[in-house]
Length: 111
Image (cartoon, rainbow, N blue to C red; front, side, top):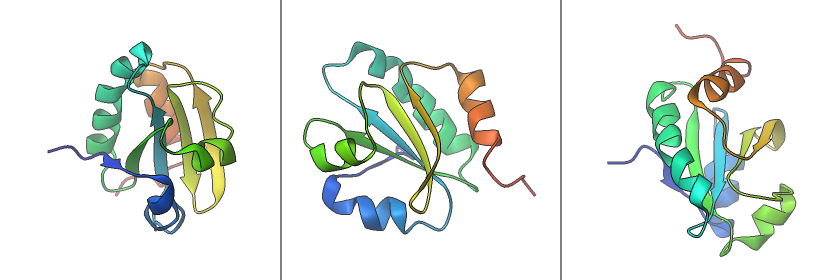
């Protein structure tokens, strides 16, 4: 079972903005080749940081209002949110090491 939750425009506020921990939002599209490279990384992040981070994914085409609100210009795109604050923003494919350090900079230290 996937640890990454799929969200839509209508669920965004309750699933992301009202979450108690930081949320990594992964914007993707079915027609996006590079997104296929990022999907396993999102699973890795969700599993690795499950105690400190929630990971959600949102398909861009059916969810235009959130895409517009967070100024997603291209996919794959990441937004790390804590409440309504954007802590980190990234567009394009990034590797596991970069994703890990991006998250570590903002997440509470473990244990």
